[in-house]
Image (cartoon, rainbow, N blue to C red; front, top):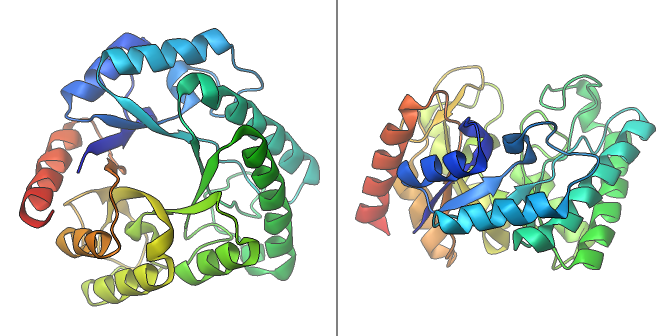
Length: 281
């Protein structure tokens, strides 16, 4: 199993230095975010020459771009903000050809107007679900146009915040272009980050979503009443069991490590994950 990382969790002054550092830290895959080249995560425009440079630099350093971040707030309470997000998403979709990547990552958003990573009571309303479905229909139309696959990641602070809701979403669309990003740390709700809940939560997620996983994230969560995410091996996620379930569902992709709090954590996270893979894969 190959190891990958999320590009914005490391800061460097140039593309060459960035991808060289990614490789030096033990990664051969990356989920790329345009924030890594300055500006915005979802730019209003992307120079094709920049996309080609990103791809060529990654290849020169032996790193495959396996996913591109396209996340925007799909249920923002302001319709105009949702429309802007959709327009920016299409800019990312258009850049995928030059990046030689056909997979875009998404999260479903929050009713909080300032921060889509902050929970809002309105997330669980039918109106929020309807807005999310409308946004999803539009991004799927773009995915069809550009021949892309989209990955949904559950987030406790977002509209789709559980394996059950993710299953409902997949079932309502029945689209071959809509898949799952499995990040088991994201499946815990407040008050559930306890060791006794770990395997039941993983089991439910794989029972519902195991056949639809496109990419696996390796993030951890610390035990406690709050949701405190951390790097792999620094929390309560049972990674050997996680890998066992991935094998059970014939997953053949890599593991993208995520939740790095400081660069010093990369080595610890990589060494831990490699040891788990060596023992269980």
